[in-house]
Amino acid sequence: MTLTTGAVRHGLPGQLLIEEVVRRQARQTPRTAFQRMLGRSPISQKDLPWYTGAKGELMVGALLDRLPGQWRVLHSLPVGPASDIDHIVIGPPGVFVINTKHHRNKRVWVAGRAVLVEGHRMPYIVKAEREAARVTEALARAGVFGTQVTPLVAVVGAASLTLRERPAVPVLRAERLISWLRTQPVRLQDDVVAEFARRLSQPEVWAVLPESVPDARARFAAIESEVARARAIRHAWALIGALTVLSFGLVTAQSLLGGVALALSH
Image (cartoon, rainbow, N blue to C red):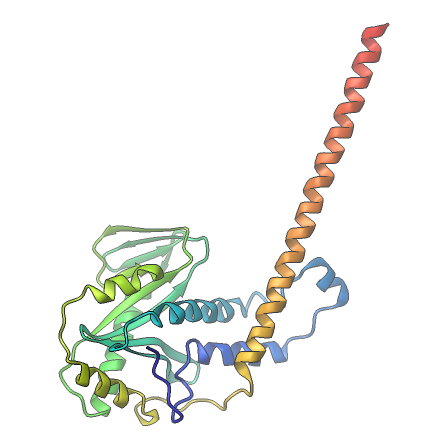
């Protein structure tokens, strides 16, 4: 279950990224009517990583909601002005920190400490280990010492995930998270799980959040709708283009065949 309380704003999946996307979109020059007609995305290329990151965290958050009731999940825990820990999962097997990576239709290759996305090396293992250390420090600030924190990398939307050798940090497809977590050996009693979650949900163990964005999630949903509408328009234009080429090809073929038939008749 996702743990949310009135004391924390960071209890919702992707909250920090969602607020940053909304801030950035508010600064964008609105698309022209012509750009809308052509299906230009409202998200600029430089802001796209924030948007795709938020979408990935929302997907993983929805998956983690399927964990049984004795589990606790916290999301979007701030560790700096524009950085957060995507998800902390606390359950009978212990404490896990999950770093979400959204790579739609990309090929991901993993071996040891190396992670490559379409051939480009990414520092995901180091980052996951650093985040586990930060959660260990947060637990210490909350008065909990000596508890192992396990880092994970959850890959969302990849066309393929190839493991050439055992990674230094588990790298999993997001769809496998629940089954992987539930098969780990039991280390914590239910009351300890609840207490750890309570302590980690306290704002004082995390960085100070920037000023909140009013109605951020509703405004993000509106942005999602605009992105989906733009994508549908681009697909429609692509279909029109394909049909036009096909029609032109058929007309050309008919003209050629007519010419050949006329030549043969003489």
